[in-house]
Length: 512
Image (cartoon, one colour):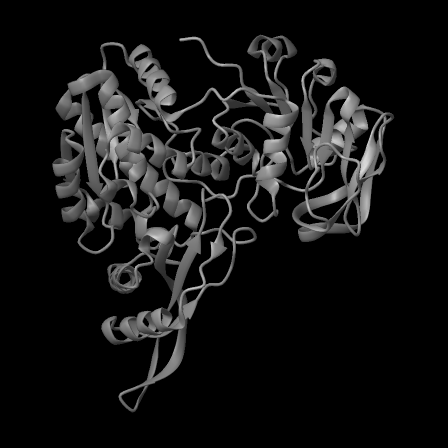
């Protein structure tokens, strides 16, 4: 199947690189990410409709800073630089970039300076999201400044050469009208043709999996969530009954989840599902472990050992299917550019080095909302598609510190209260995630006229489109009150409840 012409995102290691590509795909335009060191001939063969240079953590004037083949600047297609991408373009085209006296992280006001093609019809000032410590002090020949913040040149363009660049991040929801800026570049300036839809993704993925697997058998790691269900359904379309799905109880699931999910998968997904209880083995290995990275790696290894056992029972299994999404990947390993590792995910950075399976990860380049769109196209049940994300390591990363049976009991019961009240208030589908976290903090309280010294639960509720950025949810006071009262009354060993009001960034959604 011939690939459509893409908008190519050249990755300099930015945490939001995939978010740029995803924004382009929201316009139904096919987009791909390539590393900054991509061979120029390979780039030419892609026949890009336009090119976007991503942000990144480095400084362009540093000796080992990431760079790209400068011929890309003369390729003749529209170019857009974002953050580090702006700085790289400016430096390579004859401008000057230096360390800023005042760094810009977070919100800033952009003053638009007409005439401008990229920022046309936008209000001024415009609230934008910054994340940079360097700035342009001299613009390249042929460019003009089209936007400034208080501390920096924030937008430049050379419309005759179809080159544009911004210092802020239009791809994140924090930037007002950011999607309009990207749409202006992709659809109006580059005149890219819409050519990517869920159905085309399904067709291409099924064809690719058939070619990859051949006549072999595969196991799929099912969790009961949308990611693994969609991944299993895609692979099932490709190889049929040569796929066996395994749902593992590692002892870290939510209240009654093992039974409910097993029943739901068998009834609604119509896949061959094998439910396996390995809770004792996994919890034994976690005993005494405090470091979150070590917890993730232990859980990842235990998952693999279970699948190895099941593979021996099924016989002739060569592949393991996982519902890995891009937020898992970008936070775990630098897969395309020099990105910083945030944390290992059990099914990415937590995989053991001696893995005996070859991996199939059909959703590895997608975000959650894109997966849901694919799932709807596949005809999956809404009860599965609308389920809030649940981390692969389960409640282990919602217990800060050691995982014990007693601490699992507390966070499991508290989590059940949170979900019950959120559902009762009609907020479940509006929230990206809502859950409880057990903190390694005890405090004094008064219960039944007696002094207590008990544990603390943090309640986390966020709104997000993709999990890469998130805002804390402004839950009604009445809902928070019912959650707090319910947890303190129902969960023995807890006497204090706090509410997390941290966005992502600077925090992550999960606490570990």
